[in-house]
Image (cartoon, rainbow, N blue to C red; front, side, top):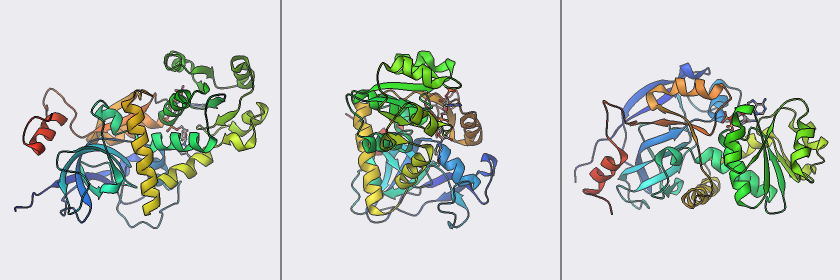
Length: 334
Ligand SMILES: NC(=O)c1ccc[n+]([C@@H]2O[C@H](COP(=O)([O-])OP(=O)(O)OC[C@H]3O[C@@H](n4cnc5c(N)ncnc54)[C@H](OP(=O)(O)O)[C@@H]3O)[C@@H](O)[C@H]2O)c1
């Protein structure tokens, strides 16, 4: 049988720096090995952790050889499968990888993939992994459930908007800190908004109507002092540094870590399928505009996730996911 030639373009960098160190490279991919699949990426997203790894602020994996790739979240269509792979050609999947998702195609072990529920939009699917699994892991560690009143900082951002909605879905009362511009957004999600800045403890007490039982500081400024002022038990406080640890463990490549990441991704896919949360797309950029997308993220006012698309539909380019899927499966999918 003739092997299909798959050419991938991806973003990589060969020294530390801002987003403008990223440059595109194109190469033919080797065929997937045992248990691996090649995915045509339709959507992928960007995260602050990639920024810290790229600018050298985060030293984990500083021994990696150059050039280094970028990106951990992706969703797409299986276009080649190695022997023993768990997904067939044309399967619509959501995946995770330590780095390299900012690409048109990538090859990963099948263990890093789950099926995309049909009703989960591509833009959402490609943004689920790192932010969603970080949100889930933190809520799991804190055992958030009915009876809790939890405060989440940066509640409208990528991680916060998922954490707040997932906490509410578990039956907790949820208070989210944000700027004035996000009050309506959080209220629509059933989250009680509180403006950050001076006097925040009093504002939280006024709306809490009882003890605050847990506090997650995503933003990383004055969180511990605020949690102490609100009498949150130390064991139920999570700092921005704790979040860093969660994110780094979700990116580890040993078999147990990958299995854990995939099982959290499966839970997220099912929660998205069931409508347990709505992930707002703060910005959707063509993959080629990755530098602009990172500049958008750096403004620190995302509402939901910033997403990259490899084939955004424009007046000039109209290839859709459906057409790729049909090309792989040889006809219209059921
Ligand atoms: N420690 C680590 O290693 C680590 C790892 C990952 C992320 N982080 C940090 O976690 C934060 C949130 O991450 P994310 O991925 O959710 O970011 P994001 O999607 O970029 O969201 C940023 C959010 O921060 C909010 N914000 C801006 N200024 C704020 C302030 N002074 N106080 C409280 N919130 C403020 C914004 O809300 P408004 O628009 O309502 O102002 C926005 O919703 C970022 O600061 C990021 O640097 C830390």
